[in-house]
Length: 460
Ligand SMILES: [Zn+2]
Image (cartoon, rainbow, N blue to C red; front, side, top):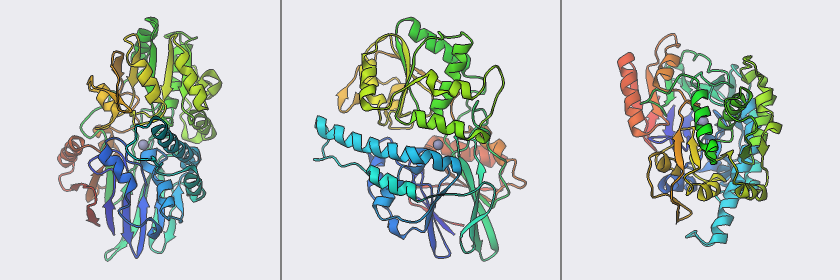
């Protein structure tokens, strides 16, 4: 089998791996590139003919793993898209939302005249997203599924977000059938909502995500620090903005904030606005899949803290704009988590110049994203080509990460009866990739470790 990485190679977005064997061509994930312009431009250029693909397997619903699907459909893709039940449920509104954002951004660019393209075109439309959703096919967990002769795969829980799965793919070789595991994004087992990753079955090769390959995440509860940050900002009359992925991270935050409010650590009447068209659907989707969730019993149920009636979710663009008129203390959670687009842009534009306010980052901020600029403390911050003075206090909490750090990844790998012969590292920035390679070699010196390059062919 030949695999070629057309994304998440030396970077953390645009996950897209082409697999070619026995005359069949299929993808594992079809994610959107986010961040710097040179990466985003890759969304517009197809490295192969989408219409020649025989199938697509999804690890999970995050847009950096699925957000290119409507584009592939627009380019002529018309075959099945296989995923877990949870991923299908999330994709149904996430892809529509992604398309809506593409259309809104193009419209905003045209209305405000900041685009160099006249007129600015969306990458894809709602119609393309609807067509992609029509192609979704659910595959049951832990059961081999054979889409083609001699090629089969099965899903296991990956503990990253609702519905996230790692994939074991079996393919033919001259020495008989072999298998590779694609981790997709791997959880760290510390989520207060999502069940942890399952142990990996034996495989010859693993393609391992490397987001935190050079870092150890805090393993203690995020609640005390989160409470302190909320109190610090709101008690001085400020507004706390939290850029967050609408799916996964927002629900983790709602659960944590609800817990702090119920225990009286923060003001129980403090308004919490969730300004993302997806948040209500995402939260409801969580409640539809109780088997994916950890029902912890420490004085709270999952339904309680995730009950959307306790929070104010906006739907329309007008409601989002109306939030800009509220100047009393509140928490506002909005996407995107790395400030690469979405409604958070408008809120940051308005709130960053006021030193009373705060911005809390709760996820990984990739190189070249506006989120990275803010957490690095750089003062030259621009939105839509306009310089925005950064006076608000910037906070960062790593506890909420839905990714494994290098110790978590090694612990997960070590559950395999025998170490894999080969590990391919993807989904990481250069420092994380080399650090993870060193950690793995130290532990498993016999294993071949490959850092995947964009467009590089790897033969298995
Ligand atoms: Zn993810």
